[in-house]
Length: 114
Image (cartoon, rainbow, N blue to C red; front, side, top):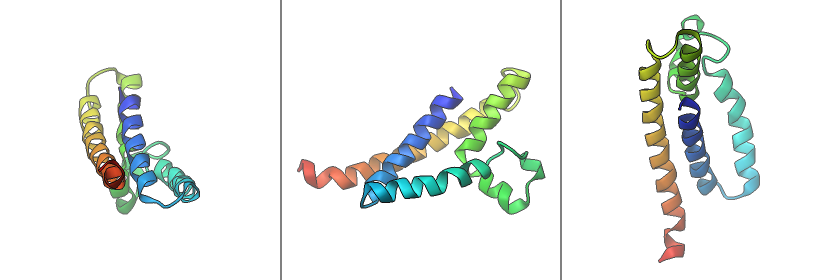
């Protein structure tokens, strides 16, 4: 479930970006530039408690953090603990990013439909 929600969130963000940039080259340049910092600014390699305050704040805004947290807790402890909270925060990120992606898509395609 966490991977499906993360996939939906990242696909929605990519759709919004693809509709906002002028060319394919720009899209791939931006996604390439953003993908590694997105990974490194999550709790994939370093626990949130070990991060400096500014990096922890960025990691908490990163949907990847909550997907990793949910998967890590499911593997180590099973269902319970912080899994429902992580999934709920991931759902919120999905809803927000899907709304942005749909809005950007509608904005870019509205003149073609009318």
